[in-house]
Image (cartoon, rainbow, N blue to C red; front, side, top):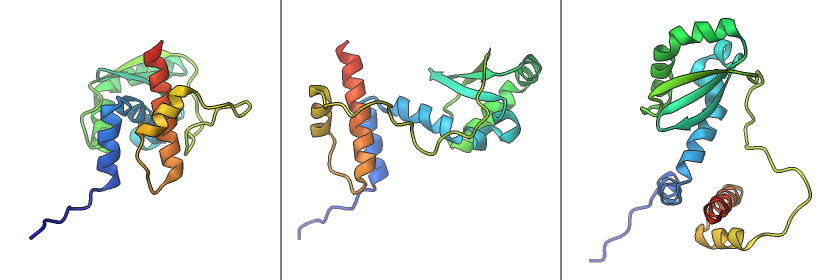
Length: 156
């Protein structure tokens, strides 16, 4: 009797693809930005912006010294709260930096590049060939663009 393959959720396919192409770091960073208000709460999110996440260290830009000092005391609590809401231990520590933090809610989708439509590069065409067909073509094109950008960085 022939065995039937079990269906695989698209999430698992995309996770594997992203990890193989090292895109998971960029996707995780974007997730932090999109969910920032949910992760830290409106009061803190309106005065801070998440920055880089490298080796478990999350950089958080704080827009004034009073909040900088307040958050310095709350770093451990914020770390636990962020990880609990993400459902994994992604943030090991928080590094606060003074600067201009955005107060608007993050966009629902990544910003689209400005300027005229440009021709696809060889690297983008290569990335297009690497990404399997997906039901959601818009998602597929985003993955293709991310992979093309990664190939471009690797080529430099």
